[in-house]
Image (cartoon, rainbow, N blue to C red; front, side, top):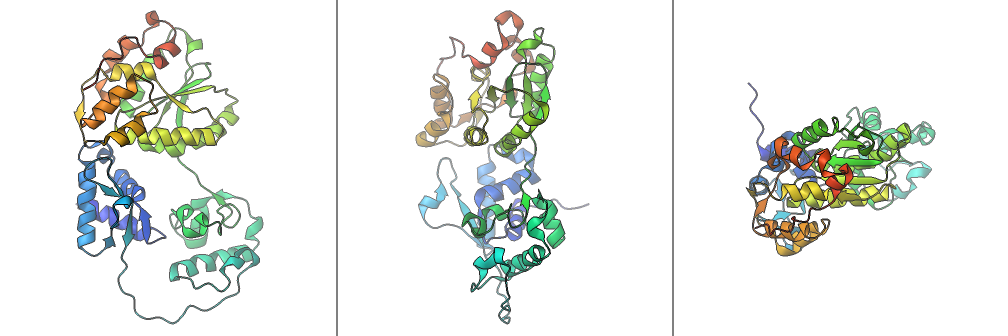
Length: 368
């Protein structure tokens, strides 16, 4: 039987696979969540991640920021914004040979390159020499497999100094493009509206209710946000709309009321606007019902951070959520059971859109 990898082993694997020595903490956390999805909603996840980083630091595998400004203090324990890999000493090697670069890579002339970068650009140089500059654009992982025999070799290159510095273009040099996981959508009716739901159980509950809605013209699309992946998958929606000819005038979002979930949906809303879509707006009616449900303990969030992530919500929901976060409590979507959700959404209560988006008059009850 294979022994499960520990959290520090998972983080170390991601750290070693990254093209840069310094890796954003979000990339490390993503590796942990991908390996163990349950960790994403675990109240103790910050402590577990902090402990794993401490193990790697004490083992001499990485170093963490010293300055306070490079740490996230919005909740306890604080977590770093980045970690830096400490590579083992390498035996002395001869200086890498100087080579002639194609015109597209002339920015490399006279530069001393690391072994990793020399390998990257040597392969890319050969690709461009072989008419790569006129090649059809393909997914980045396809190009990585073609050039390096490893489809993940170029993962994270969009955050490298070469790309961020404006030297290397994924489109123009690698002739490739990023392929985030598509937004999982089902079309239920002709209404030009989309409701995105963060978690699987809540998505299934709403699908059961909305697919049997007696007024089909009130129902539009329903999408599974898949937790924090919505921030990347939302950018795939314009292509889906173009393929189907569907008109979309409103995107509602319904997710967990916790710091991570709210922070992620704010980012997703910004990216939605950047690709020409409407912003993500809160499904106020569903959130108001969720706020009346049982709460879970979580890490305490500072007032400043709580105000920042709650700004996406309308009043009075925002003030209620600020109180929850600063008191160390959160509300998960699963707390609003299917039976209770059916009582919230019923044709007898009026138009569906109003039930989803509008905040009931009694929603201002303090949330403590």
